Length: 271
Ligand SMILES: C[S@@+](CC[C@H](N)C(=O)[O-])C[C@H]1O[C@@H](n2cnc3c(N)ncnc32)[C@H](O)[C@@H]1O
Image (cartoon, rainbow, N blue to C red; front, side, top):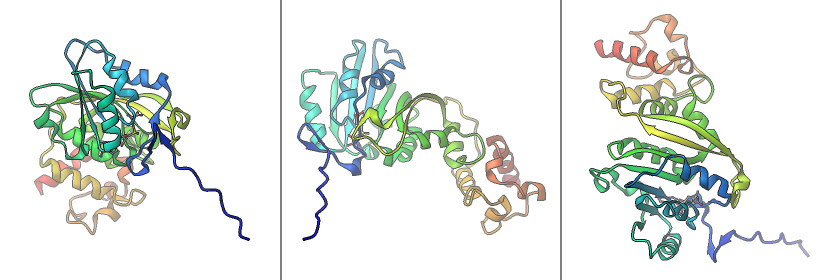
């Protein structure tokens, strides 16, 4: 008779199965919950939104803040959205919506107000969420997020391995501050990776870039194969290599700063 492998039990909490596709690793360690909630001092009228409440550990800690004005929660999973709605039903300041955050127009929803984001993000959509925040800078001013350690390091890199389009883009539009590194044991179920808390503040006056969209496409092209030279990455592109000096073409994008790229971009505009 064949030896049957024992069936691995699917993780669940409060009778609800945890869904891997939604990055459901719930924060258990209250030390880190406090780090998130206490980083930005609440003042009278503070509005907070959370992306993904899960079972509501962070949500409840935020709702305990006496100076909280409003708390908006966006949770894609109907089971957790219903549970937290029910748990916090008596608190009129809290509103939980069952929705995909990527379908929310924060500028419209929060128009005329200032909001803070406090969230343990679903790691699989970290970059789409950061792009959404960048587009929502009129209403989202600062926040604390939990993301994957490797991604946090990528965002903060100034050169070398790991430095690339996300580093340049997200450093241009936000100021970042590293907070605690968080081990897998702080979550249930534990993720396979380390995590990191990051504080961000929207950069109110980023340097103006001519044809911003074109510039970021150009940056992506420069980093197409990050280990190769600019010459290799650009010669087949629509930019070509004509306008650049041989010294510059021998460099890798990972050796260039934001200012270097802006200088190159300005030269390209005059061609
Ligand atoms: C890492 S868990 C954090 C849960 C809880 N805040 C905590 O700290 O324990 C991420 C949460 O985001 C939710 N989520 C995943 N994708 C989402 C999306 N596109 N829009 C809204 N919520 C999402 C998941 O269902 C999950 O509850």
